[in-house]
Image (cartoon, rainbow, N blue to C red; front, top):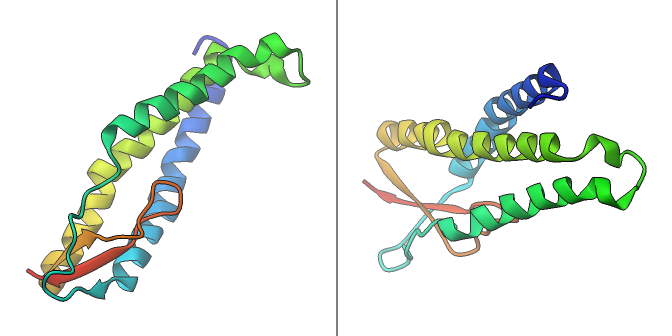
Length: 135
């Protein structure tokens, strides 16, 4: 981002800190709240389909790019720079899920001899519900 580059870095750093503190805590809570699944109750464990995520990020970025055209108050802070920030933030969230949060679950699986699965009731907007089976 050319406009306010230090602000961009600071915002993305805040996202990283929040992901590490609040995100990791939330994943540990999901693991702690997981209930044992009986055979046949496992379901597919299928995550949110990957095709759903790019349209969400693109829509957020498009809103920020188009916002200055509205003339609304504070819309001068939107634009391509803000779209880059939101895209960067979404990228960091995806990386945290793929690289950090999976490690939290894997550590618990090894320690307890369990295998965690995403179960029915999990949703992109409301969060994940986990169940477990013996490894």
